[in-house]
Length: 190
Ligand SMILES: [Zn+2]
Image 1 (tube, rainbow, N blue to C red):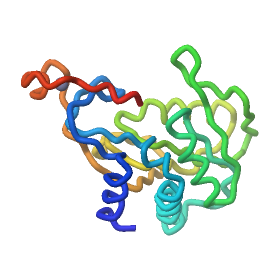
Image 2 (cartoon, rainbow, N blue to C red; image 1 turned 90 degrees about the vertical axis):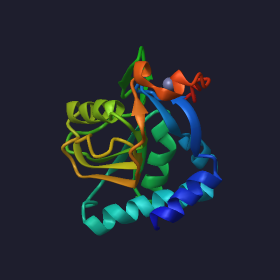
Image 3 (cartoon, helix red, strand yellow; image 1 turned 45 degrees about the vertical axis):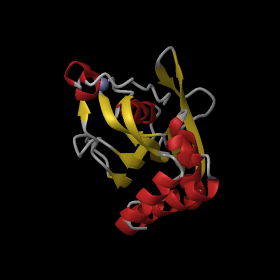
């Protein structure tokens, strides 16, 4: 899938929004990916995740993968669709007291894992998920992202694939020109 087609899908589903947003990282931006709007349309979500798996397949990294692990909530649908396309198991880690845990699943030592997430800005949740997989003795094979907003700044130390790389314009709140213009700040509820 070409990036123009992907962007069209993101806009048509309302996943790519324009305005004045506070990102999960605390930074402000004039754009926000509400990936839930893409994922609320199963056929589009499937198409996008298929294209993501295709990228990883072409790169030759998907050898003997057992399981896809995603951080809840945002990553769950992505992980599920990616796992379906790969024909493997799909599990998730989930937040408790502001920290991610593997609560209702087990990872066996040597289990080969792809980590899936919807949007990465600073990569904190993916890094937490990597740490959980490694602590359990799992082997991280690759990272699969729908949208990488880090502008190439995030390096997890594993092969990382994204359907779309789009570095947003972001500002520290004190330096945000949209705040200065008095535009109401939207908390998109990611
Ligand atoms: Zn602002």
